[in-house]
Length: 608
Ligand SMILES: NC(=O)c1ccc[n+]([C@@H]2O[C@H](COP(=O)([O-])OP(=O)(O)OC[C@H]3O[C@@H](n4cnc5c(N)ncnc54)[C@H](O)[C@@H]3O)[C@@H](O)[C@H]2O)c1
Image (cartoon, rainbow, N blue to C red; front, side):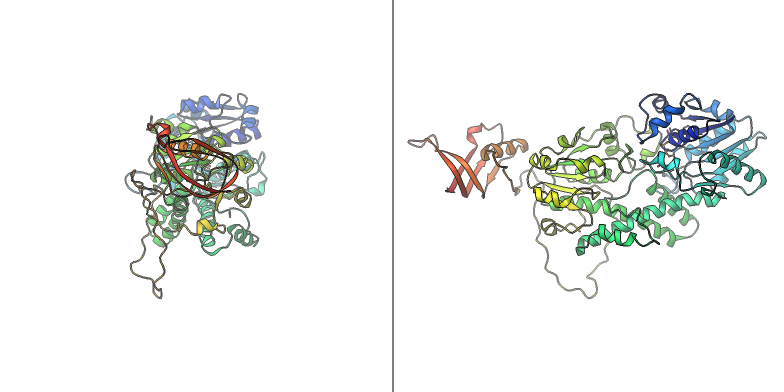
C-alpha cells in the first residue's frame, strides 16, 4: 500500500488529502501538523475550517485510510510520498522584508524529513514557493541524506477556498513539475498515478520544476490582475456614469477574455494573491527586471486604492465624519462560503472606519469574535504563521462589537457596509433594517449584491461599486485621500503644479465638521411615522450624551400636545387632534444627567 504523509493540516493540506484518501482507497494518507488544537479539530465533529462538502468527505474516510496526527516524525519516516503544505508567509524582517517569501517553515520541514527518513522518498512541494525553491530544498535533503534518495516534485495547488472540494474533484488541471532525469520522470509518474484515480489524463500536466513553481505564482498574479483591472474601471465608471456590471459583461463576452473574475468589489483578499504577487515582484527585482516588478506591483496598489476609496466614500457621504456613528459591517471573511479572514479587505475597511472613530457592529456567519479582534489588532503578515506563534492575547478594539445576527448589527446604525457576498445578505428584510436604522440610512455595497433600486425605494441612500451614483453621493466628493482613514496608505504622490492645459475650476464647498467633542455638528433626523418627536430627540441626545439644539423642522404631525411653561400664569396643557403641518420647530434637548423636564422643545408653529 502506497503511504502518503502531508505536513501541514491547513486550508490546503486538509481538503487535498481528504480528497486523495476518498478517491484512492488503496492509498493510506496521514495529515500531520505541529498544532495540537488543529489536529484535535480534524479528529472531531467540528473541523478547523469551514468548506462546503468537506465534512462529508472527511467522515467517509477518516479512520479508514485517512488519519490526522501530531506525530509528524513517525508518519514522515513511514511515507513513500511526503507532501509539504506548510505556511510560506511574506518576510517581515531582513533581506526582502515585505516582499520575499519566508521559507522558515518549509526549511524546518525539509530538515526534519532528512533527519527522520530511513527509506527513499518523493518530496512534493504543495505550498506556493518562489521559483527555484526545489533547488534549495534538494540541497538541504541531499546534504543530510545518509545515502537516501530524495526526488523533489512541484505540485502547486490551484483550489479556491469556498469551492475547494469541487475544485479538487474536478480540477481544471493538475500540474506536476520534476527533474528531467530517469529518477525524476519516475517520481513524476508515481505522483501522476495517484491523481489518475480520478483526474483524466489530459488534465494532468507535467513540466520541468521551475515552470511548475512559476506557473502557480503566474496564475495568481493573472487572477488578481483581472480583479484590479475591473476595480480600476469601477472608479472610472463612477466618474462617468457608466455601469461597471454592464461594462464587464460587454468585455467578458469576448471569447478571448471570458466572463470569469470580472466582478468589481471592495478589493481582493485571501492568503495568496497579495503574498504571491509580492513574492513575484521580489523575484523579478532579484533577476534584474525592475520594469516587470513595477508592472505587477501595480495590481496590489490598485487593490489598496480600492479599499481606501471605499472608506473615503463612506466617510464623505456621511457628512465627512463617522465619529461615534454606528456602522454595521455585514461580512468579514474574504469571500463567501469560507470563514477565512486572511488579508480580507474587511480588515482595511474596518481599520479605516475606526481611524475615523466609527463604532462598528460586525456580523459574519462564519467568523468568530475572537478572530475578528485578532485580525484588527495583528501586525501585517503576522496572520501567516502557525497559530501558536501568533500573539496570544491581542488587545481588543473597544469600538468593535461582534454580533450573531444581521438585524442586530444594523439596529440603530447610521450605515451598513456589505463586505462579503454571503447569499443570506441578498434576502435580508431591508425594510425592517431601514425602519430600525438612524436616518438618513446609508448602504454601501462593496460586493454589488443588493438590489439598489429596491433599497432606494425604501428610502436608503445606496452606494454600489462602479454604478451610477445617487444624487446625494455625487454632491459628496469622495475622490480625495482622507488622512484619517486607517486603511492601507496610498503611497503614490501627485505631481507638483497644475496639469498642463488645465484652468481654474470652481472648487467644491469645504465641509467643516471636525470631531472635536465641543464642536457643533449638523444632523438631519427623520422621525418615523407614529413616533413622538420629543421622545425621539431625547433618546437621540441620551445615546450620544450630547445636547441637541433643534433649528428647524418640516413635515406633518398628529395629536399635538402643547405645554405652557409651568411658571406662566394659567400654564396648562393644550391637546390638538388632527393632522398639522409644521411651519417652524425649535428647541433644546439635553442629555442625562439633566432631569427630563428640563429638556424643552420650545416652539412648534403649526398649520392645520
Ligand atoms: N489557502 C489557499 O487557498 C491556498 C491555495 C493554494 C496554495 N496555497 C499555499 O499552500 C500553503 C499552505 O496554505 P494554507 O492556506 O493551507 O496554510 P495554513 O496556515 O492553513 O496551514 C499550514 C499549516 O502548516 C502547519 N505547519 C507549519 N510548519 C509546520 C511544520 N514544520 N510541521 C508541521 N506542520 C507545520 C501550520 O501549523 C498550519 O496548520 C501556502 O504556501 C499557501 O500559499 C494556499
